[in-house]
Length: 213
Image 1 (cartoon, rainbow, N blue to C red):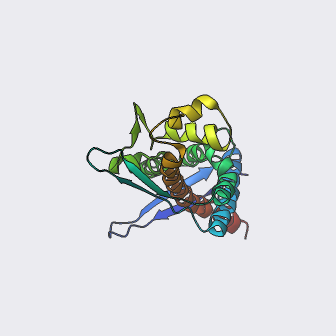
Image 2: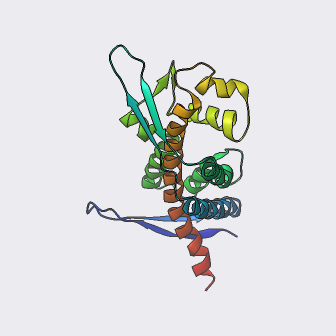
Image 3: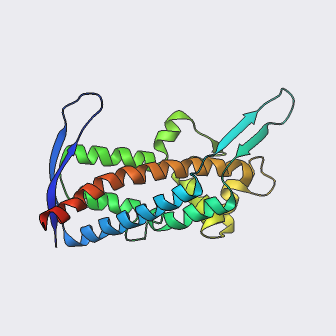
């Protein structure tokens, strides 16, 4: 069964609100439901773990090697959240962030929705973070989606040696302990984008509930 309704976007800077109509077909509605369920489970795990607070400190002394100091969640905290993020992060999953953005975009041709979703994608991919700072290893920006996927598949979800070496090879100045806080910062950005997208989706799904009353 398709879902139809309206959305209103309000702005804290006093701009006029944006109103748009949407129609979601049955297949895309199922994608939205899967995303919503996975996002809620992830947020519960995030709350139980106490969040993903991380810091990376770099200090330099003339004539000496750089010194790195990191603060990050425990292995158990990180693993618990990554477990619940899996159906949202992996692009082949039916309710992944990327597929869900596509499903939401198909429900309306309103220009604002397309712009808003592109903004969420920029948060999710780390593009907003790279506007502030770029941390590189050779030609690879470590705070990029490509590097994040290397870390995820080299150290977390899988143990692909070539991907692991791409971000933290043996003997590298930037060891895994140094680069991992960068990827946790990116995880926090992804969680932020997931939460913001989830707010839109929950309003859309509420329309199907209200229409049955």
